[in-house]
Image 1 (cartoon, helix red, strand yellow):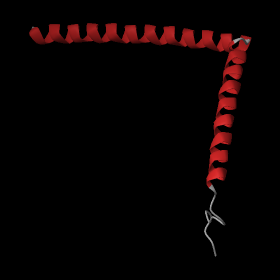
Image 2: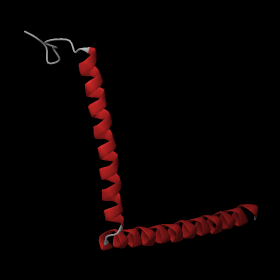
Image 3: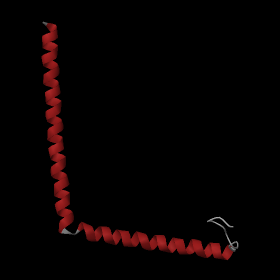
Image 4: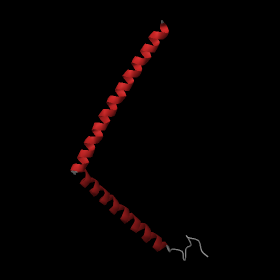
Length: 85
């Protein structure tokens, strides 16, 4: 019984070269298709809405982090003031 990767016959050099050529062609086609899909996606209204939501979430996160930093600073100031008395 052969394993799952049993090779019935070895590939010729020509077959290997053809396989590599086909892979190169397919990879090039995939790159072109991916760029086309990305360009189409960027022009949709849905993408614009999602981008705005991400920007808003980022702004809210920045405000929260600023608030936390200010809270921490005030808390440390209060602790230091108590410990110096």
